[in-house]
Length: 155
Image (spheres, rainbow, N blue to C red):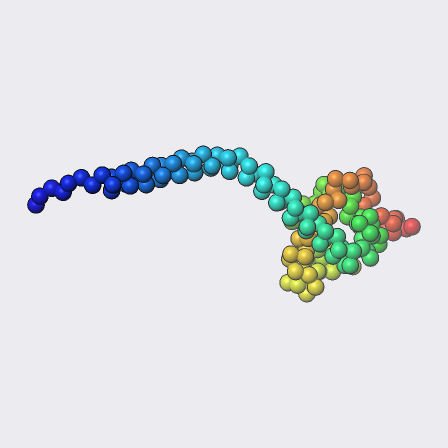
């Protein structure tokens, strides 16, 4: 079979496409480090925005479901003060969510989770937990948080 004559136009076109491919590959290789530099800050900003949104939802839910016993903004009432530094430092988010979900046996705190006969979804309980955690920054030092009105001391 005879050898074909070189096609200069085809050779130039192929080389041009290869050059473009290498250029695009280099640009992509340079973009990834820039992305990795900025992405953690973007994720943290998105996380903070989500926590703020959940805390707002939780504040509304708390006002409608919890404030009558726990006081406005968790300051206490016939039930413990949930904005107390002592409570917030002692209780993890998981523990707080569990208390809301299943209630506290032997007290007037009933279960709020739909799974235990309550009226709230797990997302709503998470929102209330996030709201309570948002109070931690300015939480007062209140050692008697369990009995804010002094009801068990005969008062």
